[in-house]
Length: 169
Image (cartoon, rainbow, N blue to C red; front, top):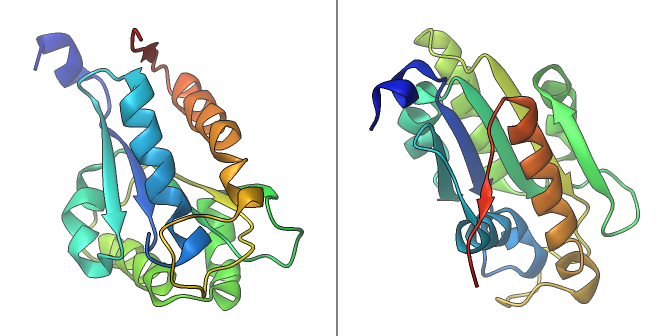
């Protein structure tokens, strides 16, 4: 780690979800594609959070800026993209259809208890079409939004002063 990167804020891009349940794995798939396609500075980490819930406490507590990517049910057409700020998250908890999303929000709340809350938290989500079918393949509607979501993550990072480089082919 360079001296320059030590002075920059820690930024975490966290993909959460269950890759065994069709569109539920969207956040993980976005993080995987970002790691394949881009190089990130030392102060940016990409994390496959899966369905780890409370086990993510250390990851969340270390982040000064947190960008979460997930499937978010919000009663819109499948494939709709969302950007939710930290203040919007509590009212969305009633819309969650999986335990990992509730666990994630509870873990974020625990960060407050230990006074290690990220300065900024943004959730970038997609409206899933199917989160119940056992399959590692996403629906075509949601899979078609992977690149758009990657662009949204890169935009968030750019707003935080991060420049990402595409890997050479």
